[in-house]
Image 1 (cartoon, rainbow, N blue to C red):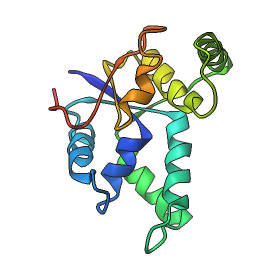
Image 2: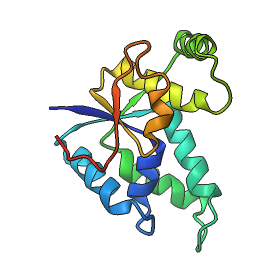
Image 3: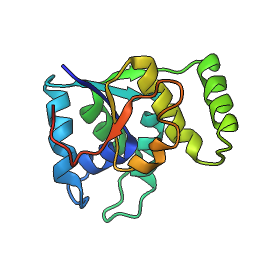
Image 4: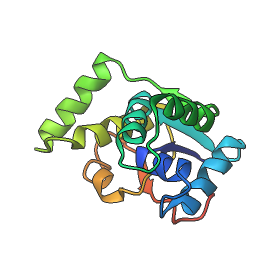
Length: 150
């Protein structure tokens, strides 16, 4: 069975029915929740998901308690990958070596978690963001939910 680390972009789309990419993302989340594919999430992604859900301009607004329930419901089948201090330093060194700065660190943390989990792929709608460091540190290849489920 192939395994996938789900990026925040896919989880947001899968959770929110009004999202324009909901159908494609939800198909993957359903397969992961049913155990048809390996399902990983970086611990950082949980925080990022909460931030996006509670901070986005939606009507009606998603409350903190609603966001918590949505996250619990949609990630209960996932294996959460924690990063430690050594992992964070490895990501900082990698980005420094590649001369990459700013918010790219959040994608790099997810990519490093995918490596740590030995996931086959990173599932994201932001494929180009991950390709910047895909060939370094044995980071899994990225794919988008537009591909078929394997």
